[in-house]
Length: 270
Figure 1 (cartoon, rainbow, N blue to C red):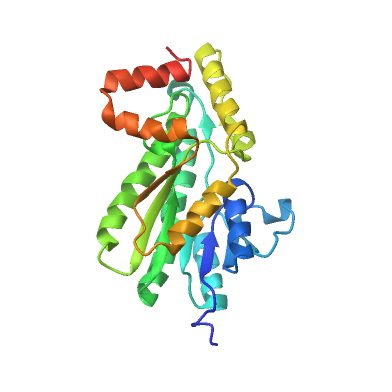
Figure 2 (spheres, rainbow, N blue to C red):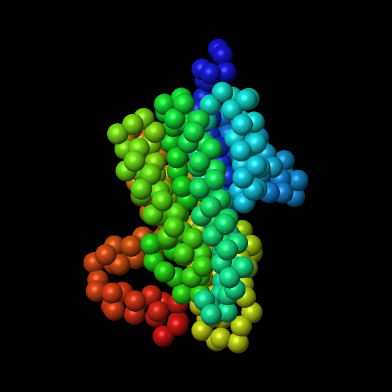
C-alpha cells in the first residue's frame, strides 16, 4: 500500500506532552491510529508509548510549517488535527501586562491558527480531513481572574465557528471541544501573577480545587474518537462535570445579571 493510501487515519495532536493532548495521543494510538504529537520540549518528557513525538513551537511559524511538512513527507496526509496546545494565566486584568496578554493570545489563539493554516492547506489538496480546535468553557464564559485565557479562547470560538461555516458544504469537517476542568498538569503550568488582591486568591483556590478534583482527561480522548467516527460532527462539544456543562445552558437561558451573580458567587468574587 502506498503512503498515499494509509491503512489508518493519521492524527496530529499538538500539546501532546501532558494532560488532554497526551491522553488523547496515547488512547488513539492504542486503537490503531497513526499519531504524531508535538511539544516544545519533548526531551523533558518520557518517551511516548506507541506514538511519535516531534518538537514544535506553535508560536514559531517556521517550526509549525516544518513539522507539518515532515508528517506529510512521512505519511502523505493528515486526516485529523487536534489543535490542543495552550496554557493559562491567573491574574486580574489590571495586574496583567500587555506582554502577558500578547503571549497568551500568541500561544492559545495564533498558535491554533498557525497549525490550522498549514494543515488545512494539505486537507484542501486531499479533499478530506477533520479539524478539532480545543476551546474551553472559558471561551464561552468570561472567567474572573482568567480574563486573558478567556480572551484567547473567545478568539478560538469565533474563528472556528467561521471556519465551520466556510467549509460546511465540503469534505473537511470542523469541530471544537469546550472542556470544563480536568485533572491535568494545567494547574501547575498556569502562570499566576502575585497580587495583594484577596479576591484573586479566593478565585484561584476555587479554580485549582476544581482542576485537581476534575475528571480524567481520558474522557476527552474518548470524545475525540467519537468526533472522528461521526459522519456529521457538530461544531461544539461541551465536556466535563455536569454542573459545568449546565453552566453553558444557564448562560443562554438566564438574564445576564442573574448569571453573572451566579458566577461571581461561585468564584467568591462578590
